Length: 291
Image (cartoon, rainbow, N blue to C red):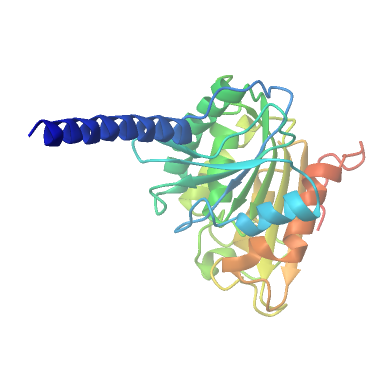
């Protein structure tokens, strides 16, 4: 009987140790240690509706391995209640880290995403000391970054958004009749409430913000990327150029310019890399719309 009792106690003790180790592991994975990276500017990659932290894996891979933009990456996500989960960590040697960001409630409105993004970016600033950040958002991820750029531009608790790349983002929603078929538009047939909000808040944009909008069109006669009307993706020209430091557009035309993978095309990755890493505006380019 004593032998069995000792065996049971050993098993229980071992189980407690294992449980404690698992808890420590969970804490580490969800709350990485604080590291001083205040001199670094992270690249935040944000998915569209229905996506997750892996949605922009391909872009992250190209930026890291082909273009050598970054030396480290990690993922983080946030729940509807604001609970943040980290996957991986950054070290003190990280250069231009990539952070693949996800919303657990991945079908929520972009404005709600923006509020959650603020909570997450506050944690990033506290944990790593980031004072600036660049953001790349696909579809509604680009809208979340745009809301963030307007609503929190003067909020010192979050890193300052320095550059914004919106890929296939429906600034004027999805109805073709609202967006028309004239690529040279200076106004649209009908502004949705979302676009009106962006226009109303346009003066809140940081005057040092640099913006690139990437849009897709299946053909010159079919001005849609299959989901988002081309002019909706370009509707950022109705509120960004007069308020941001730089506003640029990139239009991709052809069968590869489909919404679901527009952020993965070689042109999108190359243009994003150039805009984030190489582009330096001259005085003559500031406030200029480039097509």
